[in-house]
Length: 504
Image (cartoon, rainbow, N blue to C red; front, side, top):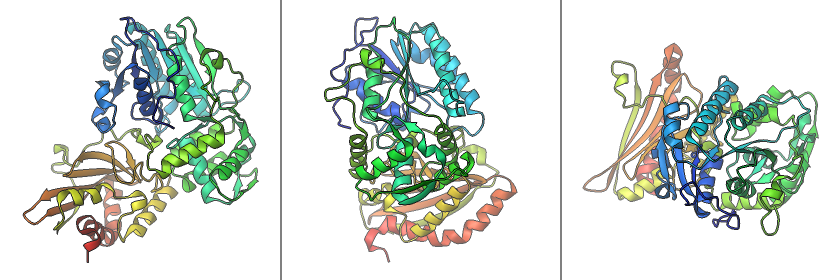
């Protein structure tokens, strides 16, 4: 997707104060929200974001151009503050990665938001949901998306619900699932849902509809399907992807015995998508996701040249991946439950068990040179000579339903606080002195990997610290079981960071 606005030719909605509308964007750390903010600003709108951890957005180029409301969308007072004076509210919240009753959580979030937008006198609400086939038995994911739309539309605030199918763009969970399945498996046996029809849509066209929806006449309210110009079966879509990516023709053999549970495990193992998310995405693929009409195109005209064909959307996404220019990814959104977890420096650990592996190496390189190596760790860059050991740990994590290593990096050299890095989450960055990563792999406890850099008279001192807080007896046994591996992975890693190609 080009950096210029994909909606530059659309009208701008004027707010109550006669200025371009003030738009509240929820889900700012998510895949869609992070890109929508840039589009709204480029189109002339004023933007306010609601974020639990706004400090994690400090590296985004648009952060100085937006208002920031800090807090949790579950909190009514936070919502009231965030919506004060807002003209257009974008609802991009979801709980797909919640391990427990994500449907109940989504209903609760939507209900609170609907009430708050009504009280705040918001002129327009916009929600991105999923295409629904009325005659089918919906998956839990699509059912929750439908209920969310119903709750928001019943708020009394004019609401435009845009319903999309598979979104094609660099960093999209659906796209990465399609990409890895097709690229890694030239011959595959697949579930029968690969014969269901799907109408994919390019991320650039989704953003155009989201921006354009702000200026739709407030008298209009309802749901509208949005889709690209082509309809495929999932099987045909994999074939089309292979052709667009320059791969050999794939051999795809559907078999009826693969249950949704087995399919989810298979997708979770082969792709970067963890089992919890794979289970919910795969369950939705039993439903056909084809736009039933094109009413939205009467309200938001197609761009010059028309909507983006599938092959072009794939090529744009792959170019961004190749150029290391992926702006946002599905992994950027926080994993539920981690936000309130303690830090390794919290006083609450006093008197409790905290295992550490601390290693220090002095380097003659400048602190900036060493920091560049710290910040580029992981992904395709690996973890020094012991990368094989990390890959083994990643495979073990995938086998038990964890995220594994395949999430990789958004950018090969630059990290943003809050984003995913393999099976880590970037918890803190203080350039060029500190990088702290929180583990999101499956384990009976909490773990961090931390690098601290300090200038010395002769160069830079690197302190690498692995920290582990066990939960119960299994937690202590886990640390004991992985301790021998630490003697392999950690010495080579700290030397690589400190000394680079000069290590011995």
